[in-house]
Length: 123
Ligand code: 5GP
Ligand code: ZN
Image (cartoon, rainbow, N blue to C red; front, side, top):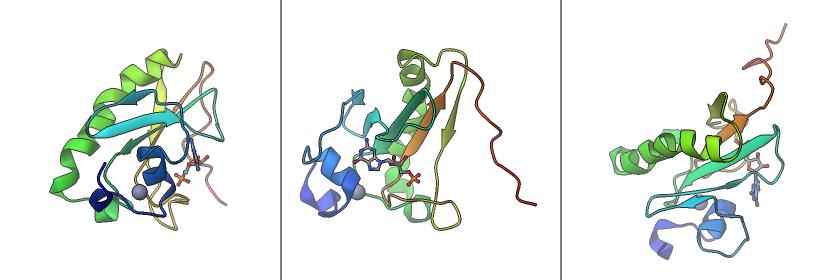
């Protein structure tokens, strides 16, 4: 990926550029998938666009192909990772969404046992 489409200090751009190691589970011209370094479920993958976009607030029509591809490959990658009886995708955005890494990424989370509730409701 050319420097024009990646950010020098972004951790996921560094993975795209090969500067930080990650086990590539899937790669094409638009997206890259690799295991989350701190898995929160037996299956926990991340799928990212190769182009830097901080979060969905910054997404435009220019990102449509990559964002669509992230969804289009999720089922196959979940199944290949062992989550063949259901999985969940999550995209955290901004402060309220508890986003930690400001490069769009889709979490793919799976079992084998059912995951917890989607959200813990605060009382
Ligand atoms: P967020 O809260 O932004 O949705 O999630 C960021 C995720 O990125 C976290 O689950 C975290 O474990 C993962 N992560 C952070 N740094 C790295 C890294 O260098 N490599 C990998 N594979 N995952 C990372
Ligand atoms: Zn980035």
